[in-house]
Image 1: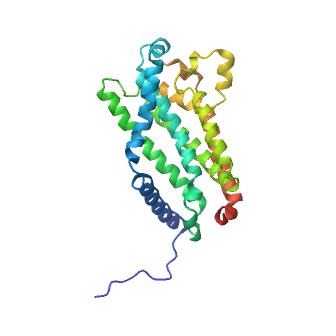
Image 2: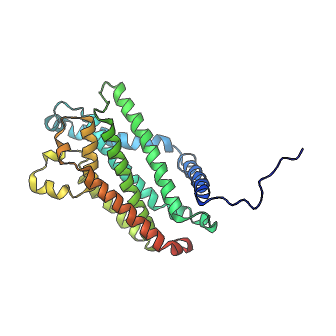
Image 3: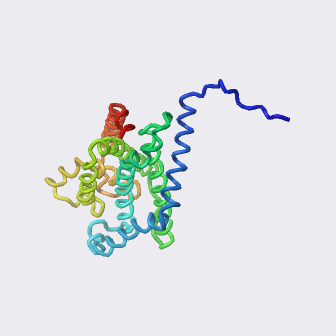
Length: 268
């Protein structure tokens, strides 16, 4: 008995083709991220854990003064993982076009697909890392349940979206101007210190605080902390609307760059 085959004249919709491309790229990226790199899963957990341990050791005494009644480990954990989410989505997403250049010979695969899929994978991985490290803190006796889970999820989603926008822009500009990638990697180092990763923004004096609040990442981190600690003073300075504006603006700008230079990105 001969099984009927799909007619050769069946035309798939653009959405169906896009889903197939994204699924294939996601599996390829996941395998490259977790299977080909030795100890990739371990490093995903160790990198933020090492930062948390170091900052707790360095600022342990100060934390009890600045955030009385709050678990310093959870305070630092939220700051580090929130910042790493933006940094890794932007940084690894920016490299997606170069890493998948050979696939652009297939007209169904576009540079923007590679960036979006890699950003989605990084967001999923850091979501899992967040859950694992929260569970570890919970086993250590820390109350890790957020008082406002929706606010935590919304702030994290907007930080991820900001990372996506940066990835789209940097992937395009970095492919056209290779030297830009080195400059951006240097830029994330000072950004770590001005994003309130290891201190509450309420502890910063007024003139400097106003300048720091121009940084949209800081708003996301403070909003996430406000979701965990209802009495957290830094929440008063956080604006999710400001973060949303930056996130949507960066995504639209990145998509515009991808569309404008689509031909050159494939030809690189």
